[in-house]
Image 1 (cartoon, each protein chain N blue to C red):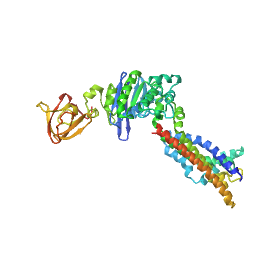
Image 2: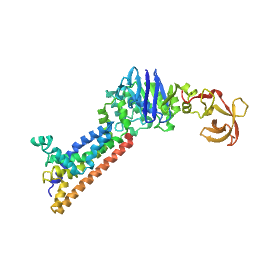
Image 3: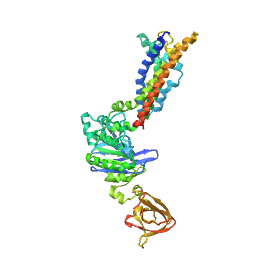
Image 4: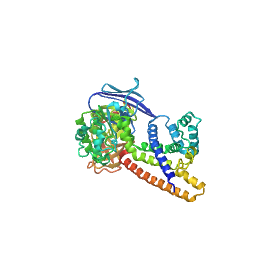
Amino acid sequence: MTLLVDIEKKIGNFHLKAAFTMDHRENFGLLGESGCGKSMTLKCIAGIMRPDKGKIILNDRVLYDSEKKINLSPQKRKVGYLFQDYALFPNMTVEQNIAVVLKNKNRTKEYLEQFYLKGLEKHYPSMLSGGQRQRCAIARMMAAQPELLLFDEPFSAVDKSLRWNLELQILDILDKIKKPVILVSHDRDEIYHLCDRVGILEWGQMRDIGTKEEVFSHPKTVAAARMIGCENILPVQGKPYAYIGIPAHAMKFTSDQSKSQIKGKVVKILKESNEKIVIIRFKDQNLYVRMGKEEGENIQIGQEIKIAINTSQIWELNAEH
Amino acid sequence: MDLTPILLSLKTAAASTFITFFLGVYAAWKTANIKYGKGLLDAVFTLPMVLPPTVIGFFLLVFFGKNTWLGNWMAENGHGIIFTWKGAVIAAIVVSFPLMYRTTRSAFEQLNPNLIDVGRTLGLSRTKIFWKIVFPNCFPGILGAAILTFSRALGEFGATIMIAGNIPGKTQTAALAVYTAMQTGNRELAYQWVAVIICISFVAMLAMNAVNQRQQLLIRKGGAK
């Protein structure tokens, strides 16, 4: 399985430039804030949107090539698209949703079984739970025999408390169907759970690309650091890099005299369910320090505290790659 | 009371609605899917709704009159439509078409566009997408459009009197019968026709509201954007 995407599209002052490749069956994640062009990239690959220029090649089939004036219709691309709202046909039952795609209607049963939809054959989409809808949409997508699957924010329509379970289920399904997947999301945990490789997209531009371990433990751009949840991004001068990033959990409240420690005044304490974030003022910058619930219990606002930094987790960042 | 005018009205409205239904749905689907010239096409299709019916009648008379090739040919082959029931049907079609077209188009526009896009990625042809997805999910809206069209055709007066005339038993519909009754001072008869027309139109509007509610229900079930 190979996929080459190298496309550009301009809409108003938004300029999308997406380029990446996949060379074996894997789950590739595109991580970025909403409006950064993730969905647009998927729509261009599926053929629902047309790029201005570039090329898209899937398994030696040219899906799109602006120079050769090739632009296959979505019907001919063999690319499955899982919409955010799953886009099940509301006038059809689960069974009919799948059967409408199949030439041989007798195979409907196979798909119902494979995607745990038995017993729901006669249900309409409005009667299904979020997870059931998602499975139905994937079953229908698989019935069209795609070579590549595109998942557009697959869990955004599901309650956060249920997501974790659904992610496990999707992992199980993805293992079973063995198809390459591009998953788009603004949720780093979702991407980390489900993907092997990650690309960071910022306002239409590709930033870091690599295995999820690389990108999540050694981000190289500000956008990547921000997307993986780095709380402290500070400008620096006179260095080959323009910023440093320090995740809040790389800093510890300390009382001993280790080398890399800084002193700052506590400005605010933000309590979360299992942790707390202490905001301290250091050299005109706010630093976010993550602590366990019980850690530093006596810290008060206005107090000066010492913070030790795990230097292996200081990232050197640039705006662009 | 001679029932011929109301029977003629119903017959005219039914025939014209049947034709307008297909024309309107086709026009709505085509304009919803074109990239350029949408506004212009929409204006042309909507024009009959805002033009005075007399202007439409005038155009129809000119178009189907003996001075055009088409009108001449039709008259010579015994298909002339001026002062015939067919003329009344054509007048009703032209006047009610914008209602069918616009209402259907708004039903199409309310449909979740992802349903069409997902159909394309699933390899379904345009025809299949229309008949299996778009049409059923917009059906209550389209039915509502047809009822509105039928009601409008039933009430058509201006263009009809110009092209089909007001010939009792031939082209005199209920709407024209009211006019004639008033002209001849037969108030009682006018009242009767008015009552009949109001009843039919009222029932039609109730029916339209009922199907509109069904459309809203469908939309809530996931058919909308």
